[in-house]
Length: 433
View 1 (cartoon, rainbow, N blue to C red):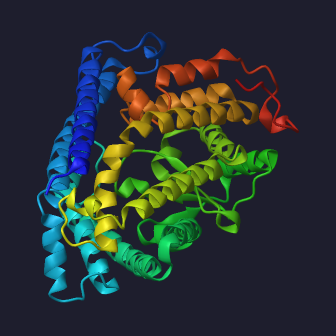
View 2: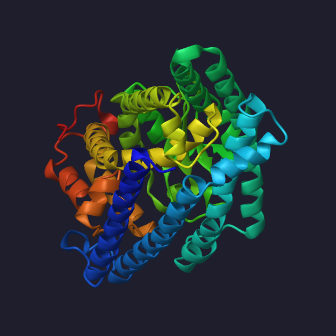
């Protein structure tokens, strides 16, 4: 029977959905309206055809996202007020004891699997229609299915023990179950970071050490200047799936690895790759990774505390369409409806992320040449078909990186006035912005 929570949930769902759709529509209109003119600062480096491709690509992805969002709302309503979650609970009760660990694990896995099945057509369309239309997809259907099978297997191997432990804790730790659950999830997240480089990522890609040549020498010198130790520099065969290029760090402590997509290595000059890595090193040296993990842990702590206050109240379940109260049902409901109540946190996290990006750029300016980072970014914007003219409000809500024009303007604001970093003995060649 509907109660006050029902109407609060519906209001939050409607507000979040309408805001998301409004922002997406703004993005499509804004990008399309600026499709026929390259921004002045990029006219010499990005052809009009590439700019138009980026606009069309952005609009196509956004429209697909709008369709996926609409279906997602229907699925959330089906699970909650539509009674699907209750139906699944009843179905599993015919096999397992209601409220038991086996029943709860089956229920939560059912929710996750059904959501994945619903999103599968969108993933296929995104990969084999949108990405292929704009020349990015290199994945075959066989590789897609192999990846899907591996992802499912890894998810089950890691996820099922986590669910079992989580449900065991909720039944044994009394009113403070949520605190112990938070400790478990935090430890799981950190453990995942440790095993990701050596165990999980090699299941999907080949990693070749880069030990010789100008690029290896430049990066070795950069790491020495920055005082950064890693377990190695690797090139990843990302080109077998996509022509997009990227670089990233993964792991913690002795497991830290620097990974370059082969597409990035092929398109950028060694000095430009060095500048990109100097930016990524900035995130590590300025403790952005640790800070983001701490924020994530704090948000998980707050969410589990709220759930701990709700889990014993029958109105929490009935207001969201569930008649049979259980820990698993509470977790499923929280997972389904939580994003509607936390949506407005998006721009706050985006603002914080952009601040980190500017700081990492400033760090890179002190340890590599600004012009090399600017040239690398322009090439990446062009080759990845990233729009140069996003809608300001949409970008403020969603984009973790600053708009291209603003980011490059900041990089160019301070000229490189010092000597080449390869002959420098410190990282103080230019002043941070």
